[in-house]
Image 1 (cartoon, rainbow, N blue to C red):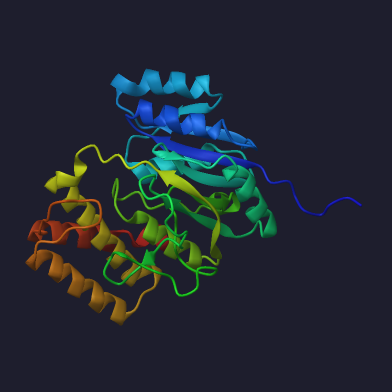
Image 2 (spheres, rainbow, N blue to C red):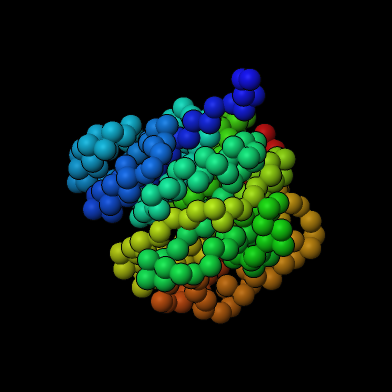
Length: 294
């Protein structure tokens, strides 16, 4: 009897920037899988110094190479995803490696319900025995919190989530307003608002080979990230899940960022947002209405 289950073609939307050694390790991992993905798209945001080397690596490992838009991480994720031609799109990062049955396990999970967004977690190679727990979803502080129900949540694993390609076909996109930061928290909330179910699976994971490149001590980078995180909070409070309570909490946490020096995970320094930073993110958040109510 013929199967009624449609064929799953898993495209890998791999974003990279200025890290050829990391990308090579990543691609070696992809090409060591027990089951190969349908395709790997390498979207390269590298500076000209690295671009030719990245292109050569992509070709060496049989990937489709495309220059990225060079407008930040989430513009690059959109770009890579739109080039993919599979039925499902797996977000991927150049500092990840994978268990050899990673693709095999993902295909098994997706086959159980091909209309969901499936998210997987990560492990640090320095702590290989950590439990596989659901990634966080947006908290009212602008950071993350553990979902109450990992099988039906708003969490996103930024470099290891599988999306039915209909999500992009219907015009949904990552917000590109800021080049980096907690935009993935907002993306998860948008998908839920649009009726997509997001479920965590502990069937597999990625190894996250952390490479900050000294950014953990960069106060300017930290300030930009905190500003982005507050932007996410206000967009959520005003346009994605609008409510007076969400708005009040957003202003409370913005005030905290402006009165006290704070930090976020991955940084070893602290900063305080200035008045101009606060005004800028509020204007950006208010102006983003057209993205969510076209």
